[in-house]
Image 1 (cartoon, rainbow, N blue to C red):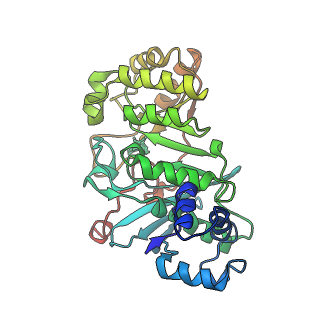
Image 2: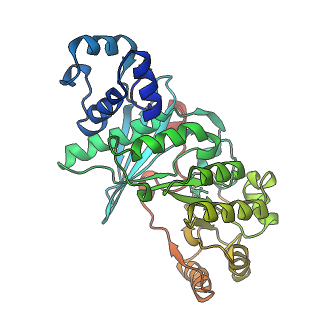
Length: 350
Ligand code: SAH
């Protein structure tokens, strides 16, 4: 069975042509799936009964199921979803005054092995399919609809578990589907992909010429420290990343976001701020500071005091670098950055 959710439009057109259908059949299906959000072929009233039967034989409309739903004090929702092979992934719904943002996972587990992040502890089990990523949004949309008519996911960040550029093709299909006007119609500028710095991915992504946002998890301003914190840096050093970012800016005319974790005593001194300013000089990007979310998995890392965080921010701003502090959501239910870790039932109940 082919899952109709998660078929990028060109791929769906090709599938429909194989069935002897005209290309418009694909957009018609998109409208039913993503705009009317029907969950049964028989509700697709402008598709002939005989073709609906063909669809039923070869295709399915399958979504992950909700295993657990947690709601934070701030209204953030974290879902633990069951996948078909019993692996589990998490996604998070954050409520901003400008809309509803979904934080989507791209893999079951993660192989990047950043020394401070819970999502990588057990390594990567597998990539998520485009349909499993689209499914995360569709299920969050169902929750929003139950709460309040007319609400839907308006912003998407691919910042859950996994490294999106280690699952490039599926992530790209996912982006195209949620961005398509007959798909979920989420504007490109409301979609952000975050990478730990897989350089080939940055070049490929630049060549797509999308108007989406790209965020780079920098976290250290020099190779010596970044090698220690993020093992991916041994493959793609900072000069390679910065070169790729310059190419991305030139190709897309978009600026990137530099994500910079602040970990007490590790990367949060004035000297680090100075090096960071030097590193990104000449690029248009701005810095999003993420105060470290503490976890008992890594007792050696802690969050700096508010004063230290603001001193770092002030240094950047005085040096002419635009910077913000990331708003934290759902830390009481382990939904904040770096806290997602589900892979299987055992892990969840540990
Ligand atoms: N693999 C991608 C997508 C994950 S985004 C990437 O690395 O960009 C999740 C973000 O949260 C990354 O910037 C990650 O480095 C950061 N993070 C990891 N552990 C964290 C923690 N304990 N506190 C705050 N942020 C953390």
